[in-house]
Each structure stands twice: as C-alpha cells, then as structure tokens.
Length: 264
Ligand SMILES: Nc1ncnc2c1ncn2[C@@H]1O[C@H](COP(=O)(O)OP(=O)(O)O)[C@@H](O)[C@H]1O
Ligand SMILES: Cc1ncc(COP(=O)(O)OP(=O)(O)O)c(N)n1
Image (cartoon, rainbow, N blue to C red; front, side, top):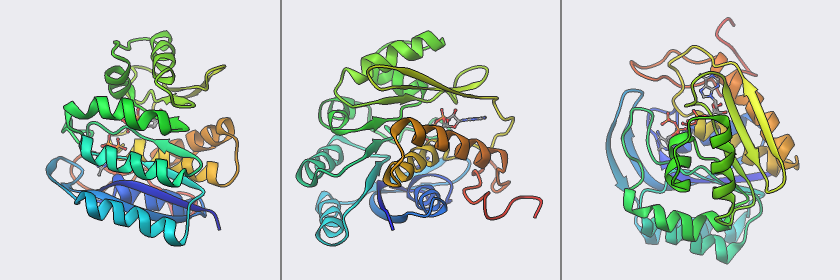
C-alpha cells in the first residue's frame, strides 16, 4: 500500500486540515499518516483559536514516521509561523521524501489568518524551493508573487513568478476566480488549464486541503503530475457536487462520494 503523510493543522469540525487530508487519502486507497503542527478551534463558520504544537514535538512526530514507515508522498498544509516552517523544511532536507505537495494555507474561508503575515519570507526562501508542487489559491498566489491577479493571463504570469522561486511546478487554483473554476498548472514548460463550471454551493470548506491531498495521493500511486492533477480536479469537483449540508456556515465536501451519496 502506498503511504502518504500530511503535515498540517487539525480542524475539529472535520472539513479541512488534517481531517480532510486523511479522509481524502483514505478515499484514494493510500495509507494516510499525519503530523499535527497546530490545533485550530474552528468550525464551518469561523476560526476561534489556534494553538501550535511545540517544535520538539513536530520534530519527533516527523522522525517517528521516517524511523519506521517512510512515505511515497508528503502533503504540507497549514504552517502557522516561521519557526514551524523552518522545522519542517529542515526535516524535509534531512529525509528528502519524494513528491512534496505544498498547499500554502494563509486564510480560512471566513477570512481568518491561519499563517502569520511575517512568515511569508520563510515560506518563500526555505519551503517553496523544496517542493515538487505548490498549490496556492488566488489570494495566496497574489501574496507570494506580489502581483494582483484578475485574469487568466495574470494567473499564468503569477505561476511563472512562483515557479522561479524554486519549486518544480505550480497549480494556481481558480476557485476564487469570477466565472468558471479554472486551475492552471505550470511545470516550467507548459501551461495546462483544468476547467469546470462553478458549482453553486456554499459548502466549500476544505476544498484546497482536499485537492492537494488528492494530488499527493495520486502522485504516490504513480501517476504523472499532469495525470494526478487531472484526476484530482475530477475528484474535488465530484466531492463539491455531492457536498454535505452540515453546520451553519460553509459546510464540507463529500470525500466519500464514491462510496455513498446524498440520494443513497
Ligand atoms: N464552487 C466551485 N465549483 C467548482 N469547483 C470549485 C468551486 N470552488 C472551488 N473549486 C475548486 O476547488 C479547488 C480548490 O480551489 P480554491 O477554492 O481556489 O482553493 P482554497 O480552498 O485553497 O481556497 C480548485 O480545483 C477549484 O477550482
Ligand atoms: C486546520 C486548517 N487547515 C487548513 C484550512 C484551510 O483549508 P482550505 O482547504 O483552504 O479550506 P477553507 O478554509 O478555504 O475552507 C483550514 N480551514 N483549517
């Protein structure tokens, strides 16, 4: 069985973060493992509080995975500050895992910050160069590339700027784009567009976590980057179409639409 690790924050409401990652990986038939770096008190409506795990415990959790099991892919999600980013980067340099997918989580859907503003330089200098793929949404890509993104052509220009920071590929997600849900993959040679109609739902909590975990799972399963992104775009689209009406705010997507659906 292929093994995929998520290094991210915990969402007790189950729609995003580590919980979404483990559900997604399990739905893909890979063995899911998790290193929790922050505990976030959040739900479908808001973020209430964040408590970071100590750097020592983050170190030891990562060591515990590589001492024993190892990984075929690693997904990185919410890293709330520079110290956590440096700790994770040092461990990636030590263990050199294959297939590192970074979702540079900065804000939750309600607008609450999940990453300290002053840690962006550490993200850019230490983490991004270690990654095979980075999957920013439009606001995150604007911060990293330091340009405004209003058009598809802006998305492509920002992808180029981000790739030049040293990662091997960029998937700029267009869920926040007006109009269709267009994601752009840039690998340094080719731009590939993945386009679906925007689904009319407020239940999009955890879409970014789910997409990046799906891509990491598909890479672990041996698909090429282009195939992995294509399969994962189909997965997130179906998961949104089969959304779950739970909570009073932005509800979760259905990670297990393949196993059951709303009509069943
Ligand atoms: N309403 C929607 N309909 C269809 N696809 C969507 C919708 N919202 C987001 N997506 C897709 O979900 C994925 C996550 O995108 P996005 O919402 O931009 O990320 P994030 O959750 O990090 O903000 C992308 O593939 C995007 O195109
Ligand atoms: C613990 C935790 N990690 C990440 C997020 C953000 O997830 P994302 O997939 O971008 O989804 P939304 O927050 O936009 O719904 C989170 N909320 N919590």
